Length: 512
Image (cartoon, rainbow, N blue to C red; front, top):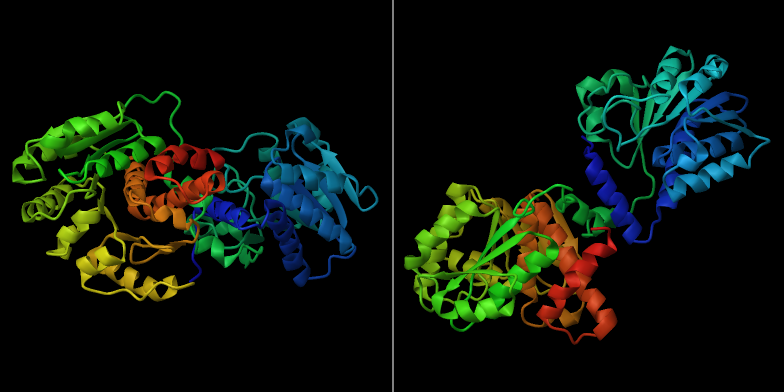
């Protein structure tokens, strides 16, 4: 069975493809041509009357491309834009509209931005051999508005072969629900992979024969983490949101030897875009941690120099108030600390609070790896910590060496019921079913503390509501992209604190 994807996943793949150098214009060209190729395979287009109904988005752009290719195959083509030309939204769609507008010999281009103007074109629907739906695509929600609703009704009444591009107008591409009226296609030509809504039984009567075509999306767009993965993990803030609504993260870490690690994680989380970061540290280092930044809420634990049982009641109360938890960095390896980590993991399981388990907390889990089952956890080991957790020594990483490590990571993620983010030159992320690989970053990121930053970014995304796998994939990309921005500016001589400060620039680069 072919995998069906949500509209959000499709958009993320498109963004990743663009990051890999395949432009949206190229994908639009391939999509529009692919539709005509499918139609042409069912019968010659030469001499046929083709009516393309287009709107202002990228699906309209696909339709303009289809019109051009249909004309090149000898069809008599009319394009009806159900809006004014200056309302076309994207640069790619505008470019293709301009192209068909100049093809005055082979294509008739009309505009019908109102229901009354569209009614004057009824004869085109009656005389068409083929009607192509290039109106509303995967981003459409809610009942159809005019003049699209009238266009759909007129098309459905026509005797022409009706072809929908990607998803029939009026069908919710995610749920398959009919939004009042919907284009009743004889044939739907969908791009790359079917959208989840159009394979639902509720949509079957509107989809018709479903054909899936390749539009040249690189396989790497679904293997390697990219900017599209950020969009799946980091929702925009509501305009009228209040303090605390955009994520409250609890960071548990630190010891008398390691004071900076939990602060780095918390500051990274704030720079990723959460509202509140609470840092729970042993009492003896609380003042020092507080001095790292006035933005941190520092909770001095009852434990003196390292995490111990005395602090569990405090931590239990903070877990109840947190949207997500990060635990591990700088804790040290005292046996009391390891016992406390296992107890905290049990609290996380009972509370259902998602967590990032990092560094020394992973080593503590090595005593009882199964303790994480039932938690919504992301484990972030490097190869040594993976060995401590599982007893498995990973193959040495070489160029493309992630391929040898991937099945092992997937196996253990499945066994433990968690997401594992294996840190290395090529980060490997898996929840046991899905996987992604991070293939950016630079040697400057071997500096101490970058793993703490990664844990903080992951925790921030969890606190914003991302599922563990999505949070881990996006965090891996964000962290390394910020490192690459620093390399451009500073070379490979930067610190983890520099990395924290670069996070907003990495996010802004991709519209976040």
